[in-house]
Every structure is written in structure tokens, then in C-alpha cells.
Image (cartoon, rainbow, N blue to C red; front, side):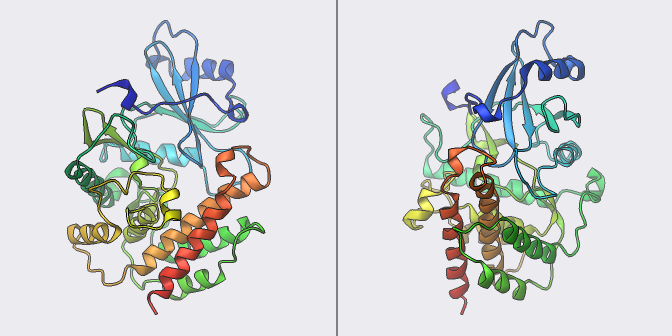
Length: 359
């Protein structure tokens, strides 16, 4: 194992800088037991893989922490709730140890200008668009990693809500109906002139909602690039990140949401250009194989998964549009979001194509 394989933070974007002196003082007052006696100067770098909440690496002498804060600019009323994200992970960790250990939560906006929380740092490999240079998996290893990830999702969906105290974090029943209505509304609020109208897709979702649903804890952003892998055994998952969208929901919608990000080797050129994880690596399962594996290992009878596929792609289109809305209205200067309008249009096209295949 070499440090080259480990996920690295980089220089903080100028417009997303943190006030180091104020943060250092707060950390000393609230996390003194976790810091070295001679802590030295606080070093702040930034993880740039995400497109929603901002995530920073905080380094003292031999001690590393991670800070999460919401982005600047207009955001959905219920999105980027740092307190909820912090409390959910803290309650979940005893039953699901892949969640990072939560250390402190700050509601005082005067410290860095917004609410935030701090958690432990888990050192490992994060498979972003590609595996890091120097990490070569066989097709068998890639398949095993894929299966291990699915097993973790299944394990999450079986978490006991009463034992963890998580049953009260959301409404639960009626989730599917609320999700369809909610994401349609979010799209309409975030629409810009350069994206398609999504009326036909939204009407189809409203008219084809499943009549039954199971409720469990769902992650709702479950991707390979939200996993931390053991650098010495890269098929082993040692951490799972980005819990801001976790809730009590429909597990099949959680799987459909994950599949929206899953680009496979025989997808078209545009899809492959938008991939954010090495899901097309030799040995990885196809979307249909993932559906079959999940259903087989959860005793789920599923003849028609189209609703969940279309909803997952539409939801991803809305997420991309909400992010693009911030860039379009100059609430962020992050150039990575400049062409998200194209991604939104492409995802809506895929939704329409998938619907047409059912006729």
C-alpha cells in the first residue's frame, strides 16, 4: 500500500475558504480531547469530489479530522441540514459501523458563517471516476467489490429502526408519493431557460407509482465514490460517506437512485463521459444484474423495475439542475458545474426513452 492510493484533499477553492483562526479556537474549545497536546497550526484542505455539501480536511500534528458544511447560495428548504445529518449518523453507527464517528456539531453561525459538523477521518481508497493510478483489480476482484457494496446496501435496508432510535427521523409511510411530488416541485423551482420541460416524465411518474411500498432506512446517494476501501484489500469496504439524503424510504427507490449513477461499459458515449465512478470497470455487474442480485438476496419479487429506474434518473436530473441553478445565478463560481444543463437534458432524454420502451 502506498499513500498514492489514498484519497487526497487539495487546495481550498478561494470562494469556499474557511476562517482558520476562528475555527481553530472552536476546535480547541470543543474537541480538545481529540487534538494533540502540541497541535501546531491548523492546515485546511478540501475534498473536491462532491457537488453538494462542502467537505474539508483539517490537519494538526498527526491528527486529521473532517468538516462538513452546506454550500452557499439558494437551496431547498429541507436540504443540507447539518444537524440532521450529524444526528442520523451518530444514531446509526452502533448498528452500522461503516458510518464515520461523529465528533461535534456547531450551530453557531459566527464561527465559520454557517452550521457545520466535524467527524473522524477514515483513511482509505475512494474509487472516484477511475480507480487511483497504481490500483489494478482483476475482473473477479471488481465483481467482488460490486457484490460487497450491494451487500452493504442490503444490510443498511435491514437496520432495526427502533433499536437505533431512527424511526422518528422521517414520516415513512407515503414516501413514494411524497418523493414523486417533491422532486417534481423542486425541478419546477430550479428550472432555467436552457433545460427541457419535464412535463411528460413528471406525469408518467405520477400515473405509474407502485401501489405498495416497504419502509426502511435508505441512503439515497449510494455510489462507489461514496465508499472508502481498505487500501490493503480494496474489495473490503471500511466506510460509507455522504448521508445528507438518508431517510426512511422505499428500498427499491434507493436502488433505483443508485442505478441512475451506474454507467456500464455498453452505454452510449455521453453516458460514459458523465460517469462519476468506475462502474464500467471489467468485472462490474450490469444494471440488470444488480437488480437481480438485490431482489434475490432480499426475497423481493420484481417483474417491472421501470418506475424505479425512471424515478432515479429524474431525481438525478433535478439534483443536477439544483446545482446548475446556483451556478447559473452566480451563487457559486465552481466551473465544474458550468455544463450541468447538458447533463440535465441528457437525463430527461433517457427518462423519456426508458418510458417509451414500456409501450
